[in-house]
Length: 408
Image (cartoon, rainbow, N blue to C red):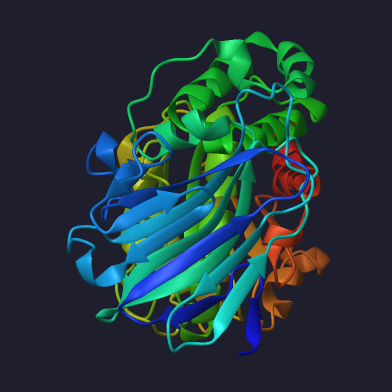
């Protein structure tokens, strides 16, 4: 039977039956594990980490590099299963370079496989795939996300209580010198990320470097995120692209906003839906929230008003840095322009970040005319797939105009 190859971010339906997930790693001793997660993105208890010392839990079992999930017997309060491969901790300095291969088989169904792009940033653990409930059945998404925190760091990120390791042991040698070179105040923020959300440590370092390079490390700002929930964005939510984008914004906020929380406003056809994403709940958070929002033609102006109202009600003394993800032209262009003009004196900076398949000429041209220049507005084109943009370039695009605005 022919094998179908999945691309990173792609998902496909599974039969509600037993599924075998076999991991093959080249050139590196590695361990395979699985996590059973509730709707909050965390394990229900420490027993939900299935690994070599605890090889079976609630329909999920591991034998060597093979995970078997009997989806019929997975409890109803388990919303997702995450398949993870980690470098053997007994091999100090071992990191992934070639990506592991994941083979997915079910009786009576075509075989599927997934190989993530190769890794180059000292990754010691890789989230290969997640199995998740959808419309009464199960689907699997090819994730391929690498982290430099080891299995213990990743497990802690999902709510597993593991024994503490020495702080330096969790940081690869290549990162230790970089961390020591960061000014004192941002180091405190990065230490919090390392403790609470180690999976975000690498992008947070890159975000902090972008701020250091632009000499705004002592600046604080209230970071907001507005997400387009138009119907044409559905595939990008399904493929994990919007979740990954939100995680990168959260990593930036950890170096700008000391509470580790980003208010998130979903722009849809109805009243904007406001929630938050935090360092301690970010795993799968966007997927959990966006299912509570109707698809529609995004009302960007209403979402902007909601963010400004929240900012003013908070009484914050620091400026607001509002990242507005846009996938197409707004239908309320006059209202958007009016809001940009009216908020120029409120300490609100707007960064429109374009990704998706729609036209974005309105946002690109906001400052194209001398007669329509908005001093508190910028546009960054993150391409159709922002996940493919390296962290260093991504954060430069996010903070360049913001840094210039602060200096004036």
